[in-house]
Length: 89
Image (tube, rainbow, N blue to C red; front, side, top):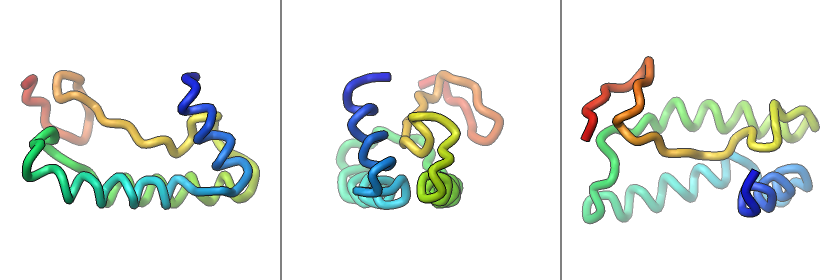
């Protein structure tokens, strides 16, 4: 686990922030920058929000699935996923 993920994991554990809060900030940043950057082919915001809420609940209960439970990631579209198109761009 990288140092930045260790910091975020500690913040989740201590209740300083939640996966839902972090994701919200990330989605706001994407909304603001994506028209210029054009980094994403597809976003699954509703799915991510639901997953972040579930993760936030697990952290509140002290039962995260792992130290990286709820950490947001981006997946390059060369990686096959079951729920998104793969453009291999």
